[in-house]
Structures are given as structure tokens and as C-alpha cells.
Length: 118
Length: 117
Image (cartoon, rainbow over the protein chains, first blue to last red):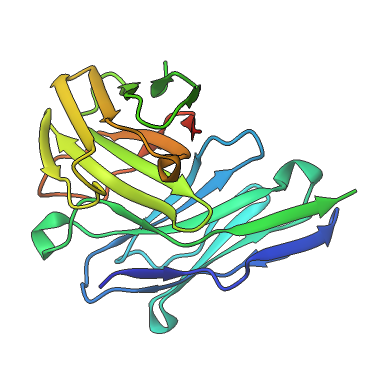
């Protein structure tokens, strides 16, 4: 069965520190997709990134970067020079295409609450 | 472009009452998902539609819950009768995915915060 584990429940940092949010996933399939979403205090879920299982290149978008390693089934998220506005709950999620036997749904981790203090 | 629209944003009702949550997906998207978020269970999928047809409703907790998608631009999630344990945030999401392909990005609405007293 699919499973996403975000072992860090809460992280607190001081502004300008770098912070890495961990995500470990379990799946039997060779084709799958990984996502990160941000949920700020206002409550909406904001899409950050989508990565398919065949693309292991790291991705950088401004202060955000993602490290995908199939060998360890991890898809970690790093925020460089954190800012107060980065304070939110961050969710990692896994999706499998239905043809592989899975359902077209996102399985979410429990989330990591990040607090960036000024 | 408008994102996913949900109404109401907040709903307070008494146990036993019927509750109807509404969702308008992003125009052109053909997959629609209903999720529920609680502190205990996190984010969980209730049901999803593709081209207005329910594909997977295995997450619907019980017969008190029902969902419909009468056309490509509207869906409802109904709880009848409501119970205090139904209190949660209900999210609607849509994607441009095609059933059988999967992996498309889901875009979420702002959610409906439901409180059943």
C-alpha cells in the first residue's frame, strides 16, 4: 500500500536559517508522482511541485529546492534563507496512475508545521 | 483564471441537520476530488469523479455521505444527517487528468470549515 511519512511534526527556525523538510514514501510501482503542497495559516492548500518517478534531477525554484532520491525513497524539500512568510504546514503527497492498479488519488503525509521566527 | 470555488466557506449546523457543500472546478478540468482534513486523520480522499462519473468512492465514510456531479462545472457533497464527528475542513480539488493516466496536479479550493454541534 502507498504510504507517505513526514517524520518531523514541527520545526522551528529563526529567519534566514536554511531548513529541510523530510519526506519518505512507500510504493510498489515503478511509475508514480510526488508532490509538495503548502498550507499557510489561512488554510488553503497551495501546490508547490510535481515530480515523476523517472526524473531524479534536483529542482530549484528561488529559495526552494527539492532532492529526489529513489534509492532511499525520499523527496526532501529545502528552504534556503527562510522567511517569516514561509511559516506554514507543508505536505508531501504520492500519486499512482490507475493503470498500475492504484487509484488516481493523492496520499498525503501528516505534514510538517514550520514556524519561522523573526 | 478563477481557481476552484467552494461554498460555503464556513458552516455551523446542529446534529441531525442536512449539510450541502458545493464546488466549482477549474474550467476545462475533468477530474474532481473531495477531501476531508481532520487533526486525527489528516487529509483523506472521500471520492473522485472523472468526466462527471464517480470513479472511486471508497473513502466515503458511510451512507450518510453522498456526492454528485451533475455537470462539468458543479459538484456537491451532502451529509445527511450530520454528526459532530463530521466536523472537519472539506476540500474540493480539480485536475486536468484523464482517468487511466493519473499523476496530474490537483488544485485545491479554499475549503469549507464545517462544525456540527
